[in-house]
Amino acid sequence: MSRFNIQDWQNKYLFEKKGVKHYTKDGKEWTGATHKMPNGPLMTQDPHNKDSEELFHKEDLKEQDFDSKFKDAMGGAGFSDDEQDDVMSRDINKSFPSEPGDEPNDGYKAAVALKDELRYITYKKLSQEDLDNFSKEMVLHFLNNTTAQAAAKIFFGKRQL
Image 1: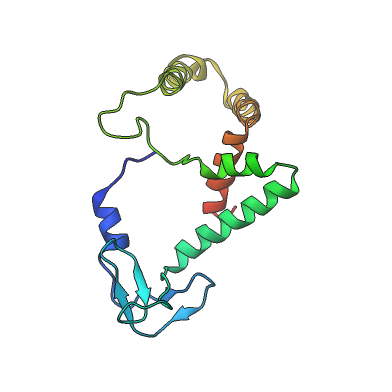
Image 2: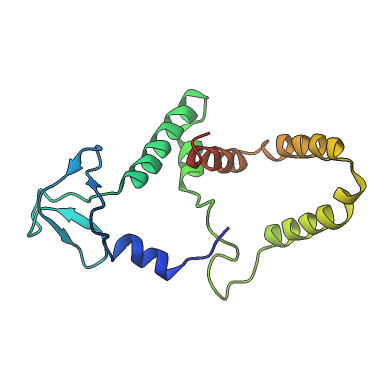
């Protein structure tokens, strides 16, 4: 997990690259006039008016489309509206600790300790075949949790798997 990077944010929201196509939320390419809002987003129309819409790059639309499909799938899988909102509102890509200066929580500390033990002790005792079987069983164990399931779906969705 990565921490907030100001240069990535600036490149995405402040500095527009020449020749990169922009799209409205519904996926239609925008070729008309644009303006940049003080808080970053590029928008249709110039000057700003009541019809102005935020513009996106193609890859941003794919991520939004994935979120929409994921929420629909959760509803079809029997998750209640509250459960869907709970999972969708979590920032699973948020780095730990969440902000510079924050203390790592106990869950983060336990995960780091377990990963270290696995890497430096357990894995060394296993053959490649045993390690593969162990990894599969651990994945199934950890996916028995809605937050972990959401993280896995996002992981694979971003890779279009």
